Length: 141
Image 1 (tube, rainbow, N blue to C red):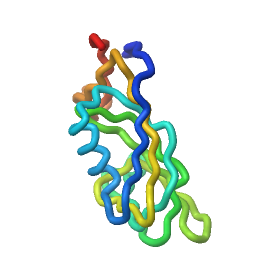
Image 2: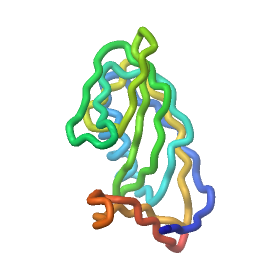
Image 3: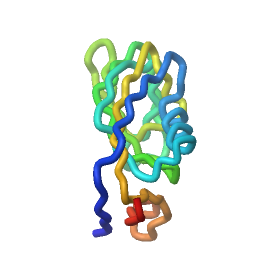
């Protein structure tokens, strides 16, 4: 196990607007605000395009239409993101996976983010998995 303890810090409320790229907007926001560690607490809204990568696959899947965001979770920092999204189509069919660039807000996406003080979320290659993984580090607040 790799672990670092932090403490609750600022809570941020964001509203993404129609046409904004969810992953790109969150990445830019974390970089611009110097976010060292944060987690998504809540997200509600809709997307017109969902670009997701399912577990165990390398290629992306794309869904289009009036898609309701049923879940958005993950960790983010100015050093990188790891986000998962679940969406429902107008018939209720669900899909979910790793959130990729190209996922576009349809009407609105309201996101609440909890910043974590005293921790830095760093992502680097892990030879055990072959992916860039989370390496949390304790820092001075």
